[in-house]
Image (cartoon, rainbow, N blue to C red; front, side, top):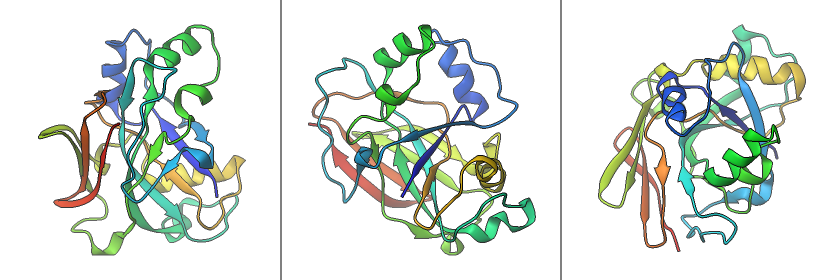
Length: 208
């Protein structure tokens, strides 16, 4: 099982990153990176704040799961390679990321550390109101801090599958984090995070 992640896939988040000191241009192709399987955090287990960072940020994303093996997938068939969706958090050690980006180093340590990918249960996409315009959100304690809709992605699900499968064979059970909208921010010990797809609560966990 692979965890494939997409960066810079919402225009509003690209603008937001500039406020963190990053020079971000709109991508002409998907920005792809990965997390190891040890990054997964499931079943609403708590997230333990790591000692190597002082600035962990949440990034809320829709996540799709691959149903069958595919390589060089054509766009007209891409939608047949997934049928379930979840919400995930791409936890990012923003202080490490700033250092690594300044030194042109990979993102692995700032995004792939243990438990950096909490994920909800998966839902059948065909049970949602509109599979082309999927609302999702994150509540930090009692406040909604992120809202997104899949229609606002720069590269949609099918386009991501076509692009990724040019380089990497997709296998059953692989998951793709599809990018975060604006509203990312820091967490601290004692926080509670609650994620929603449409109006359904799908994930809730504590920061310890």
